[in-house]
Length: 599
Image (cartoon, rainbow, N blue to C red):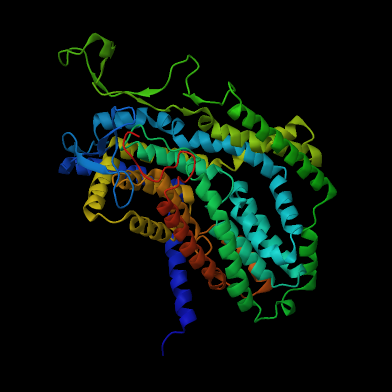
């Protein structure tokens, strides 16, 4: 007798859950990958594996300008309109550098602290979370979510819930913890099925995680890792935290409208086949109605928070647009002594080891080791650009710090300096897993780069993409599908991106795909199956709400409820990315669609 379809499906999902749960935690995963990189570097070095380095350059054409001068500019494809990229061999074959040698082991140990401290995402996320964490601690986000949901007309309840959810990633855990049960209560009070509200909220928070009006701490982490990965191929490539900002904002109405249609046309009609009122206790509905209320004190706090946010935005706006203001024009970050950070290629050897024939000005040190600068131009670690682009994370810090303090003082959550400082401490306590993961991720990526494995794999993969000569839209779709599949075995956005980007980003750059466009595809693949992957760490919270109204519901019930959102979001959001690509519009400030070498 054949197995019942539901039993087969549940068995498969259980299998996925068991396999996924056997994967190590991100901290142990990156620690293991660091050890594996050390071992692989030794084995592959002994095996003599080599790869021909490749360089990419823009094809140039000359034209006569209006003033009669001949100017050179990047050539573009007549059919696609994107810059032409030429991939060609560069230098001698690249060999694996072993970390299991005397020099390799010395480097690994001596650079351990530097690898961690200089890991790009570390300072970005910690600085941003000081302000965001304080605002969350004092209850600003919770009150804002309740106020928005509670003041929404019944007929617009679904789109508003999804809209709030799609922007809730700025509040870290608050969206998962507060919004789904709150939405269930709002629907119950309105006479609608509470699970329709819960599912819409969960779809917005998890399925629409990569959308949003605000730049979040996760965006700064992803862009920091992307920049580090891109510089493996092009040392001058910059990836700003704003690289996807316009695409994120444009994604919000798509998530809201598609989610609204799925909720009202598919999910809620299916739920209404059961009489939820006979299952849910009346006191649960009464409690839900009470949870929506926003106190007078909270309303006063929200008003003060809004006023201070307006002040912060006005100050930064004036600093950006007034002539001669601190953030107006072009700038270059510098050290306290006025110098700038430059990465130089050098050669180091002991005195007497070889004859010194370098020019005097290239000798950086003679005692106790001779350090000579190689004849390759240095690269600025932080390039020149709009002054505002160098202070995005501090802007985030103050944009949440000032409203958070104002709300805390107005509501009494902050009465003394100890209350304020404890808010900062709590924000950093929540970052403990991130700090631990970043330490081991930094070592893994540094080992990966030192051993040359990152560049060698990227060159091999990039050469394969060049030979395949697939259209960029097809590459984007395949990339999104790949990330979706990866999300079923590793749900963490930052851990997955940190693992994959050192290979994938340089690889796609070799066929003219910019890191910003890769991040756009990544945020789609990472988001749309968050509502159904068994590895989502917030599923227990959602299951608690689900079982309040369906006591016998399990993981399969939740997945059946959320699958329509996942499919619809995946199709519509990928369609938006393709339409954006065909439009030629940048994905955000500093977020060009195409990678042009030396641009």
